[in-house]
Image 1 (cartoon, rainbow, N blue to C red):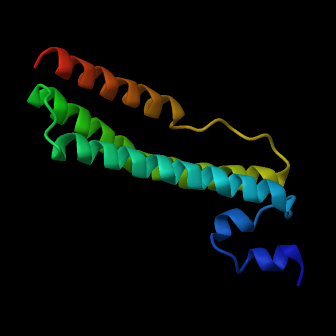
Image 2 (cartoon, one colour; image 1 turned 60 degrees about the horizontal axis):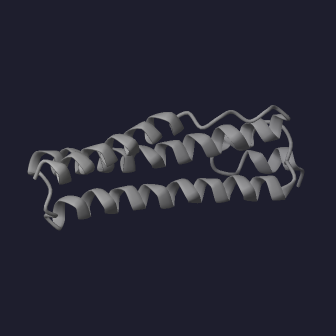
Image 3 (cartoon, rainbow, N blue to C red; image 1 turned 180 degrees about the vertical axis):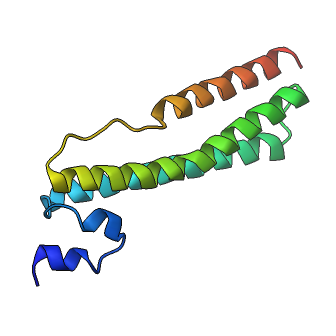
Amino acid sequence: MSGRSQGRTRFPASVYRHGTEPDPRFSLANERTFLAWIRTSLALLAAGVALEGLALPLQPQLRLAASIVLVVLGMAAPVQAWRGWARDERAMRRGEPLASPALAAPLTAGTGLAGVLVLLGLLLR
């Protein structure tokens, strides 16, 4: 069976129906990046839940705000994982350059914001 006909049966077809099979090393590296984003998501979710669940000695409103920021970021990271994986896989199959992660800047800024909220919560308790 040719690579093009296999692409019609693989999920997601929106990725695999384009171009030709890239070197498997590149596809596997793309998959590892996807999994790294998923691990990041789990860490952000765990941090947000733990921050509020452990009732650390922080100013309560700032602790809650930091927790919410971390949980929202944890929910955004899988979106980045999926969209980034699909976009990069399509680009590799077409021989196009890879784009930067679309949500990297918001995730970075949000993580920094959560850190500032925790720091303020410590200082204002």
